[in-house]
Image (cartoon, rainbow, N blue to C red; front, side, top):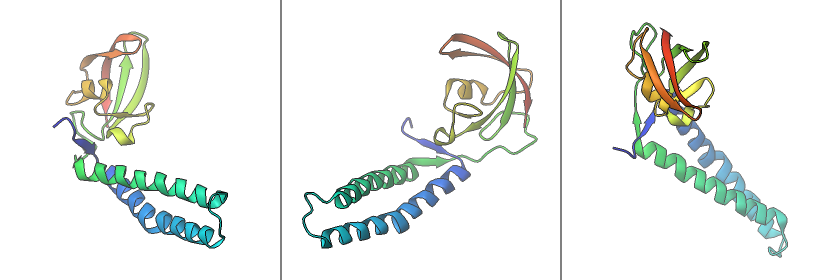
Length: 155
């Protein structure tokens, strides 16, 4: 299903931890700030009240987003060390054959990706690497054009 969200077990735990913190710490703190600001009287010029309400809206939106990720998320187990096939959680050393440059990337879920050393399994390079083996050459469409990579190692 196109709307599925791919989560590693560690990504799911991070989302659950953030959701718990927002619900159990942030929202009660903001509710208390709002209550205290209301006790001061005139709300139309009360910056603390306006700020707390704005933050409460932001936190509520974040809670909804995180809950949606958990509701739609599909947990995919990471491939452990020693696998000869690239999968979720693999650290892959590749050589850019066009620029004779080497680098390593870890395949992660989209919400864990940082675009540098942790790339989404759904990104162009992530999709191209999935289920490949050492020695395989892959062509990937990048913003700079088509680039060819060779898989050197899989950890």
